[in-house]
Length: 79
Ligand SMILES: [Zn+2]
Image 1: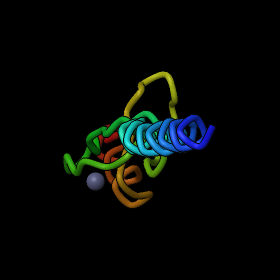
Image 2: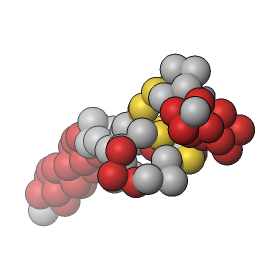
Image 3: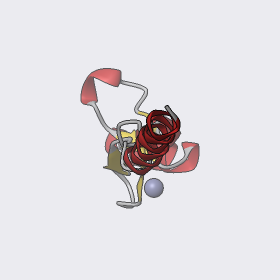
């Protein structure tokens, strides 16, 4: 009977060790897709899409790094 109890404890210990070993291999659950990087249409600076200034004529699809570059680019195009 004592041998059976020791065998059960040994199996439980092996299972606990194996669970710990496999837990470290799983990928983190908080992976997110990388944010696209675009270039400023005026100076070429690379920046994330969320930080860009879109052109006032949105159909053009051009984006800028700052309001100053958007204004400079659009006033140069108008003249
Ligand atoms: Zn720029």
